[in-house]
Image (cartoon, rainbow, N blue to C red; front, top):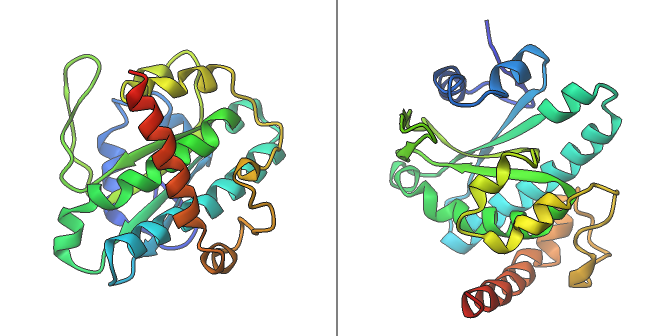
Length: 222
């Protein structure tokens, strides 16, 4: 029996990975039991790195907005906190699969800049990644490349912001009041639940320039 409730296609590799890491994540098994864990599979285009990053980012933004809507409509506080969307990215070639980290790093960073303040946490995982848990155990290597979307846990998640300490205050003070997080970029007319709308507006290039400026300022201030 499938332990994951799919948004689209079933990915056995993702299911296997979830089974392997339940002892490392205290929220994973409860999320499965409450039917709060979802996945979507996205086939990436055989194009340039920039265009692949764009597709990852656009699909992630669209799913984050759906996540926010579902979280708002979920009556159970426990299920609301356990809600987790996972976007599995299938690269066009096996070589791209090996290099999955380089494709998701910028989209992941920009998502954090946009959505941390509304209480959303993003995890990035890639094929072949090696990691160590807080208690010193080796974490099983992911069997696919994906981005995970869930609610912030304020007393635990600052641990994951070692590389972006400038966002910790946003995390601690975060609240999802329904705001359009893209307004500060002056792009209110874009429909962020539409891939075509974001593509036509070349939104990724604009938000990446904004993110580069923030990254540059944070490096200077360290």
